[in-house]
Image (cartoon, rainbow, N blue to C red; front, side, top):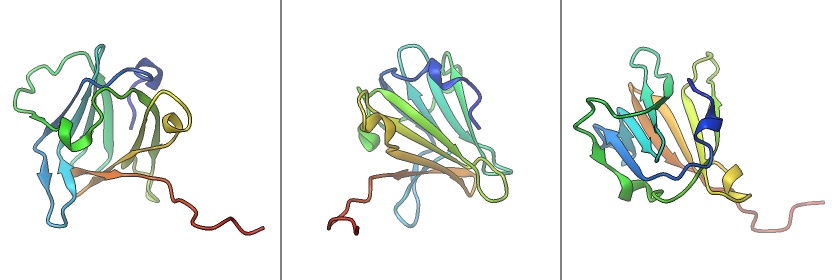
Length: 140
């Protein structure tokens, strides 16, 4: 659940990405207990509620006492990119367990989600998104 007005960060440049307890799951997927997208004016924190698997997205001014975070810039390759649109999704039970992010400063990149964060098993799974491309002309 987004706990701030996204307009406060829309268009800011990502300077660093950090994770709390990042790990590779048995199926090879990246997972973490929390993620931090750092910019010049604030830090987007994505954490998971361990009871409901809902994602909580907050805007922090500082990292405070979070000293043991892992630099995962190379995993995401998004440093220097601008934050663009975001989306929240609810599952059929009404839990906000998915958050989508787009990066870029021009359309269509700024309007196309590139990462999906999903609360599952008390952690955050991260999926890379790409458009489904047509191989033939669309039927008339």
